[in-house]
Every structure is written in C-alpha cells, then in structure tokens.
Length: 77
Image: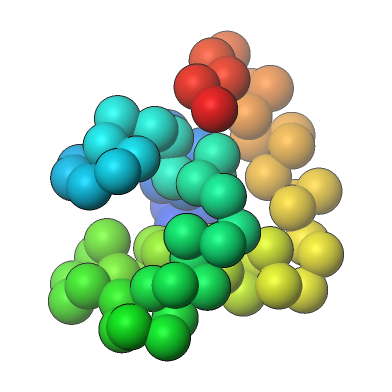
C-alpha cells in the first residue's frame, strides 16, 4: 500500500455531504457501508473511502493511530 494513501486518510477532509469537513478516518463505519452498497465516488476520494472501508471492516484502524499522532491530529469526530 502507498504510504501517501494512509497519510491522506488522516489529513484529508470529506469535501461534501452529511460529514463535510470531517477527517476521512473519522467517518463512521455505517457511512462507509452505505457507500459500499451505493457505490463509492470516482477518483481519488472513492479510492480513499474504499480503502478506509476495508481498514475498518478488517479491524485495522490501529494502523492509522501512529499517523494521527505524527500529524498533530485534531479529532473532528
């Protein structure tokens, strides 16, 4: 996996919708499941959301914790 993908998950904000402005890694799992059934957006955002879906589905959120700390992460959700 590309390290930049993980960094984007802990720094990039959701650009639209109900969770606009929330850091991607803080999106609730039910929202990602909804996207999985509906279809993820095209492009980079869709790839990031799908990656986050897989991370949460497989209980791998611990992989993001060191990155959150290293980026002076502000919890927005």
